[in-house]
Every structure is written in C-alpha cells, then in structure tokens.
Image (cartoon, rainbow, N blue to C red; front, side, top):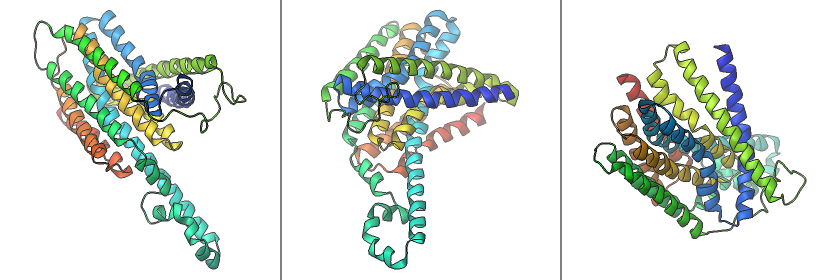
Amino acid sequence: MLLTLVLLLACAVLIYLACEWFVNAVEWLGVRMAVGSAAVGTVLAAAGTALPESVVTLVAVLFGSQESGADVGVGAALGGPLVVGSLAYAVVGVVLLTNRRSVRRTARLSAVAQPVGAAAAGGHGQGGQSSAAAGGPTDAEAAQLAALDTRSLARDQTWFLVCFAAAAGLGLVAFAVKPWLGWVFFGAYAVYCWRQVRAGGDAHSAEDLEPLKAQPRRERPSTTAVVVQVVVSLVVIFGASQVFVGQLESLAPQLGLPASLVALLLAPIATELPEMLNALIWVRKGKVSLALGNLAGSMVIQATIPTGLGLAFTGWQVQGPLLVAAVATLVCVSYLLVLFATRRVTAVRLAAAATAYAAFAVGLAVTL
C-alpha cells in the first residue's frame, strides 16, 4: 500500500508540473495562431486535455472486449462531465476564496504594522483590500468576475446541455440507426469549434505572458519550441494520469472499497485531474476567464466526442448509476447556466457546484 500511495503522490505532482508547462505553452500557441482569448481556453486548452481521454475511449471500444468497451464508452461520456461540471468549477470558486483570505490576512498584518496616523492617512489607499478585509471579494476578484464574458460562457453551457441531454436520452432507447447518430455528435463539435474561432474576441496578447518555459531567455519563443512543449506536456499528463488511475483502482481492494464505487466516483476524478489543475493554475495567475473557458470547452468535448464513439461502436445503454450521474450532471450544469445567464457568478456560488457531486456520491454509496 505504501508504494501505491507514493506513486499516487508522485503522479499528482507530475501532472501538476506538466499542467504548468501546458498552460504556459498553450497561451503562447494562442498568440502564434492569432486566436482570441476565448478560443485559447475553450478550444486549444480544452482539446489538449480532453481529447487524450477520447483516445483511450476509442482504443477501448475498438480493441477491448465488447462488454468492457461499452462500459468505457458510456462511462467516459457520462462520468467525466459530472466531475468537471461540479468539482472543477468548485475548484475555481475555492481558489478565489483562498486568495480572498490571503489578502484579508495581509491587510490585517499591514494594519497592525502601521502607526495609527499612517493607517488613517492611507485608508483610501487600501481600497483594493478593504472589501476582502470585510469578508467580501477583493477588488481584483470583483474585476475578474465582472470582466467575464458570461454570455459566451452561458452559450457554452447551452451547447453542453443540448448535446448531453440528447446523448442521455439516446441511451434510454434502442433503434437500428442509432450508431449512425455518432457522426452527428462529431459534427456538433466541429461546428462548436468553428463558431468559437470565428467569434474572435480580444486577441490573445503576449504582453502579460510569462516566458516560454522551454526558452526562458527569449522574449518571443519559436513556434517549434511552443509546439514541442505542448506535445511533451500532454504526453506527460496523459501517461501520469493513466498511472494515477491504475494505482487508484489497485488501492480499492486494499482499503476494502467496492470496485464499482472506485470506478464511478474516484476514477473520474483522477481522469479529470488535468482540467482541475489547469483551472487552479489559471485562477492563481488571475486569469479566471481562461479557467472557466477551459472547463466549458472540455465539457463540450466530453458531451460530443466520447458520446459519438460510444454511439458508433457500442450499444450505448444508459441505466442505473450512469442514469443518476446523467441527471445530476444536467441539474448541476443548469445551475451554472443560470449563474452565467444572469451574471450572478461569485466565488461562493461556483464553490457550491460541488454539492452536486457530493449528493451523487452519497446516493451511490448508499445504493451500492
């Protein structure tokens, strides 16, 4: 068990470091491709972290046994979105709240260190921290949330809900041409990418980017170095994630946990770890819009590509715990849609998305 825990920790650290390199490189890739900031998060970053999982699904349904391939295909399409739609969005909220507490602590220390007169004279200079000191969001947090393109984020949630609801509904019925509908989902993702790139938006600027980690001394890195860093970081993320999932599954019997519980609850968290870590990194850098865009784009991929593969190559049956997961996902993402559509996005409300996964976990643990 000790070796398993060490490998789990090592893989988690490796995935985090690889995500740091990936986030750094994909932003430079957006500059090189001259695409808008929205497309960097929803298309480039999302495709980088979500499509490798779709490759695993493709290999499973094509070369695995009929039963296991079907399980992987349906599970990938219905398990992953619940994790991203609840826990990953909650990560964004929790990191914002953590940053808020850090600023509040700094403000208290500054107030103690300053003489009373100086504190009174500088009271107006602490405007960036006053709201945090009172328990509310910092000025920086409020500015980041106010600058969100909530209309675009709401549109992404709508894309996901339509595709995901259709996929779940198709899993409840059986008819002869159902496998051919997989191509409809592939086409839906192609249209989504085309619309995101065509939407444009503010061009992704190199001015506020850190130097490329592979070429730290160059102000503008070469395109080759950018592409190589993207590819290598993705390979590391993919490999470490697979080892992480394998070790997690081997840990279940050692802890006396049912294998089905691990497969439905813990394995999806491990699989979606890159998306959550990307979000964490971007929020820490003050780029909340990229973090939320990455999550939205990843969810659209998962509602279309694994679904298309599952429809085309498996019987695509949605029942039992998977049906419960689908319902929980639809409820959670509908909640996110309301937040974005009404521009009521706050750190606390994003963190509250985790309750959907908690409710699913409790229900699953009781029924298994």
